[in-house]
View (cartoon, rainbow, N blue to C red):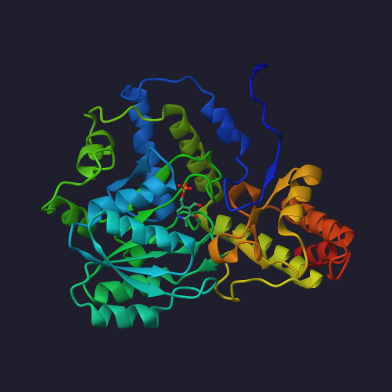
Length: 392
Ligand code: PLP
């Protein structure tokens, strides 16, 4: 067997995540590993909490990264907040709402399902019907930015509604954080989780979470121990909690945390508002090119995620062949459809560092050329110009 060091190819990552990682972040990751209780590391952790509070727009003390990917952040919220017997309303409009249901059941809770069409935002009216029919419900959970469909839901309205019926809220912001406004305190979100590898453009494997006082109260009043030892916040906070005295819980992923710290410094330098504007501008340029080509978006106008564009595959076009040509000929990755949209849609990410004019023009030119070569029925040769006209 001929085994040697692994050198991955240089790709442009325009799928549903991971997104292109800023070289500054990769450099930060290669700095010397120090101990997870080293005073210098603890200082960096405190700074990281402040930076995460900025990203989430919150003053929540319980704000930190879970040492595992977004799925662990999801699980952390559910295992800590759901007690056996709790009724939890889960709004599902794509793949990830389905995972929330799984988490409720595995935590011993009962799911009340509110289903919307894949591609639509969560409908507040349907949620209100469920809240009225289930006055004993304790929690409402929904995905803010459905990565499987490209739909953005109105988190502010959904949280307001949940609170009117005395429910806490769990919000999935894996794809939304850093790409569109996520205003945890202003909207009153009780528990939220995200991921490092989408609009924060960091390496995958960390999940920022934040819990407000109401959520912390529910956790501290639990009758049953949290079923997961690793994700039990009562234990995790011995390491991530306030004060200089930190106790060992698990060996933190030191260098991965340097990377997240750098990603958050970059976000802070650009400023949240300018980051959101950049995502919107590049989305609109991509949209101009896609429409000029004659292709359609799955999500409706006003509910579209700027960082994740879901586009219908033209009739007769081989999904896998197009994605393969993008990868082989242009070193460019986009995503295929998930679940109900498998084989029917492409998912084009413009997340974080990858949300830029060069990527938009590269992708449109590449797609135009590949589809033209396959004889697909599109408006040929005008997509790049349409995007350029938008930028001009
Ligand atoms: N929630 C949403 C909306 C996601 O898009 C993803 C990943 O794509 C996850 C949860 C799970 O995150 P991870 O793959 O980092 O575990």
